[in-house]
Image (cartoon, rainbow, N blue to C red; front, side, top):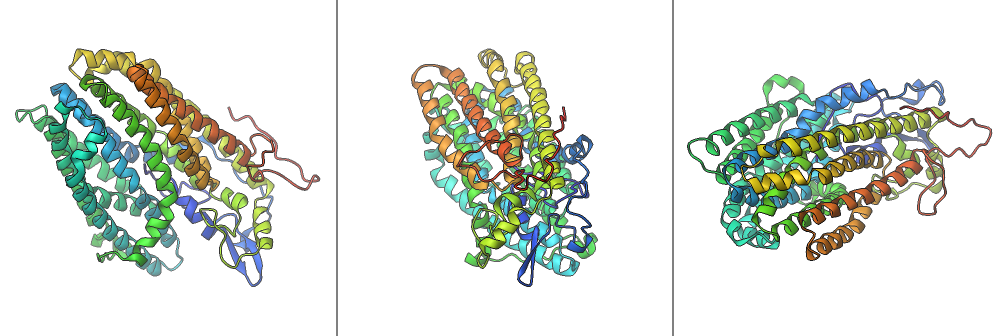
Length: 553
């Protein structure tokens, strides 16, 4: 899942996407001069410009958070809203078609998670190139990065399309898709699989724009493609052709291909002047593919584990019958939109708190905790103390503000979800059973949305502090737990209620895990556990005053 920020709204870092700061901060937060290490906590501030390490840093304000998050919200919600429109249109025509969307949503969601490294890696590399002082050199680097990413994306998309055509039926069978749903589900899968190369090109185009501090282009492309998808759905699904799920697949396929064309045209347009990219597509090799695959492997592992939980839930619902999986598809559509809404807050955490990971992991470690060649333990110790008291106070108060924003946004989203399910379930299906079933799930889905909104913000805080391995490791450990809970609820006859209670339970576990680490890293609480590293806000010199706590409620 990807979002960005408008130009000029990040006071301390240039990163604009979840995970991008994780790879970027290490290379820009410090510089080596001679045999000594010079700490540079802010990438845009040279050492001679720092008058004092304890200068007061303006705190992160709510207005700045909103300025960052609101413009990015449209681009983030465009794709989930597109899927929700598909669900609503198909549900008005046939419950069979609505149920057939369920397994397909899980399959294509899984594919998108596998290739999430395109978003993370491309944004980070383009962002570094964009910060080059020599703009000509920066444009050349951006062109090379975008060319390599597009070449690899086209290859991966073509291979994925071929795999889905060959093994699509087997994948649906693995999802326990009922026999009566196989034919419409396969029709949707084959048509939408044709758009996978364009989907990955769109992903690279979005990442390239965000890395260049351009959030307007992704929002424009998302608006155009979303509008086209709605119009095609209204005509092919609800209009005279009455194509149902096939019409929905055609609309999605055409919209995603249009998005790829728009991004390619934007990157190579002559009116961009010196920012115009020169794209040279070539067959990827090990050298060109390694920066994308290696840097995003950890995050992809985490994302795949998270998506596997939803896939298991969909498989459980599919095993309960057509109407149950139709109800589950409506719930998943709403949940997907609700869980993407807090993503801008997560990116805001990373963009404004990227420098904190240097204090935790040190200059001698890269973005994924590996020690860099040639760095000594002495250098590592020096870098681990690179944050001043004012910087620690800034990070702590920013963390508190973002957590409160996540809390209130989650409460707002949960309230909206409850109202929508209890009073607007008929918008997503004309089947009385599906409407009643989804309405009855409102008391469970609303808490799921609330908890996940806070989890999303804490994920951003973890990535900002460089806890990538922790996030991935926790997801790997949580996967068998949620698998057991879903299996137990299914075999125990708890139905759709048991499936979603299992998801709610694992969301709660993730929230507790994240809060423990975030509280330690950002100094919200002081406790000593051998598993955690030294707190970011620990001050070894007792003569130095501790940062004053402030209630930001």
